[in-house]
Every structure is written in C-alpha cells, then in structure tokens.
Image (cartoon, rainbow, N blue to C red; front, side, top):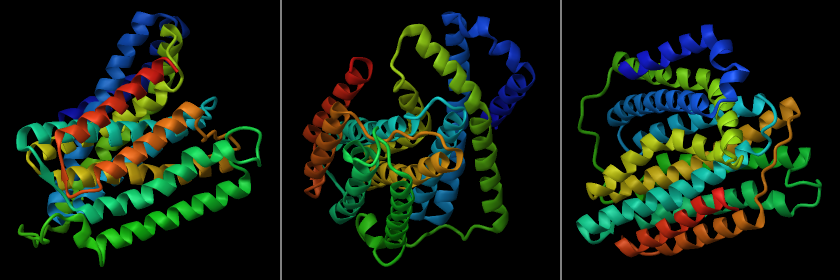
Amino acid sequence: MKALAAGWLTFVVYFFFKDSLLSKSNLDSAPITALLLVWLLGVILWCAFAVIVAADHLAEMLGEPFGTLILTFSIVAIEVMLISTVMLGGGAPTVGRDTMFAVMMIVLNGVIGLSLVIGGLKHHTQDYSLPGASAYLSVIIPLVTIALILPSVTHSTDEATLSTTQAILFAGATIVLYVVFILIQTGRHRDLFVHGPIEEHDVPDPTARQIGKWVAMLVAGALPIVLLSKSLDKVVDAEIKAIGAPGALTGVLIAMIVFTPEGISALKAASRNQLQRTVNLCLGACLSTLGLTLPAVLTIGLITGEQVILGLDPTGIVLVVLTLLLSMVTFSGPRTTVLEGAVHLLVFFVYIVLVFSP
C-alpha cells in the first residue's frame, strides 16, 4: 500500500506542478535533473515491485505455469506502455529497438548469468527441464532475428526499418507464433515447463473476490508507472544530454524498470534451487518482450506515422548472435554450473561497456 500511495502522490504532485518541476531552468541543471530522476525512478521501481507482489499472489492462486505467465504479462504490459509513451512523445524512433535489445542482454546474460553463479556456488549443479528451455529458445531465435537483425539487411527502405507491408505481415506473424507458444505452454505440453511431475494446486480455490482484489492492486500499481512515464522521459532526456550519455541508455533504463522486480524473483528462485522457475521467468520474459513489444511498436508506428528503427548496428548484431549461441550451449544439457553463469556475465559486461563506449 505504501508503494501505491507514493506512486499516486507523486503523480498528483507532477499533475499540478509539472510546469514548475520540469521547467527549462530545472532541466538545464544537471544536479536538479539528477534529483528528479532519482525521485521518479525510485517511485516507479517501487510501484513495479507492488505490481509484482500483486501478480505473485495471483500466481500462487492459479499455480504454474499460469503463475509465471501472469508475472511475465504484467511486466511486458508495463514495458509496452512505457515504450508507447516515449514513442508518442516523438523523436524516439529507436526506443523500441533499444529496449528489446536491452531486455534480451539483461535477461539472457545478466540475470541468467548471475542466477547460475549464485545457484552453482550454493548447490554445485542445478537441474531444469531441458525440453522446456529448448522450446523457449526455438521461438526466441526467430523472433530476435525478425525484430533486431532482419531490418538491418532488408532493401525495401533506406534505413534499418521495415516497409508498411513488412511491418503488417511481420507483426501478425509474430503474434500468431507467440499465441501458438502460449497454447502449447498452458495446454497439451504444459509438462515441458515444469521440472519433475506436475503437482496439483494444493491451495483452496480462490474466490472471485480474492482474484478481483489482487487484480485491482495490480492495476493500481501499474497506472502510476504509465502516468509518470512521460515526465520520466523528459527528465531522462535532459540528464542524458547533461552528462553526454548515449541515447540507447533510455532503452536500458526502461528494461531495468520493468525487469528488476522479476529479475530479483529469478535470483531468489535460483538461490532456492528452483532453477526451472528462473528459466521460466527469464526466457519467458525475453520471449514475451519480443512477441508483444514488436507488434505493439510496429502498430504504433503505422497508426501515428512515426518512424520505427528496429535494426541493430553490426556491433549489436554480433552481441545478439553471441548471446543466442551461448544460450543454446548453456541449455544444451540437463544441468548447469557456475562456469556457464560466468561466461554469460562476461558477455553482459561487454554489452554494458559498449553501451557507453560503442
């Protein structure tokens, strides 16, 4: 409740005093901009944690793999809304690409790497469902290629964008593939995404009132994030210009906002030797980001006429290919160790260095 109060109170303050807080004199001052950034980021992250708490309660009521899906959908919904707000503000044609790329690198290298190191140090080796991880990767690989690599090599446009026809067809195909995967995950092949025999949900069936309560809490926590996103975008842009940071940092910040709570859940699961949950959270988040963000970004571009640059530069393409190859090797056997985690963390370190020094 404190997070919700802080989020809505901050929104009220910015609603009535936005012109004063975000005045040109304030945004031109690096210290003041930094304070505003810390304030907004802190409140938005706090609200994001509140969303995860609500989603986690719903997850416990509904069981796996539905619980993980609820967590993932909640995070991706916030991500799409943040990206949409920034795009509709104009002047950010690469924010969708930068965010999807950042989520992929943070999740597949940073969080998975740290999870495998923590789990390996504590439990030596950890088990998970190999067919489930393979199923995730079999969908992630083509979606990453379509979203981040293909636009860089097509010839229908002069820049790393898709033509109108390509955007419509690729957005539709992406949604279809994602829906097929969800049906497989929650239907006939549910057992692939649960390590060991499927345990029946042993808690009392939730009432409509209980579900409604946590759905309301989830929405109440998500709304301040969306309502404050435009102000955050202005502050981030001002701070980036003040310190001379690269524009791609906006995508990194969005990715951190939306995935930090879920990332902490993944790390806790690995520490408790629940690597399957970590795999479901991380690979599921990466898959949902690509499967839902790409169509959303393309749709916004088609409706508003805003340019949507998706293709990565050669450096980004190399990191994507390296990450996919490494993920295939890591999840090619039924057990993981500290070594795989250390390698993933190395690639994540390289990515962070290249964000600030491309």
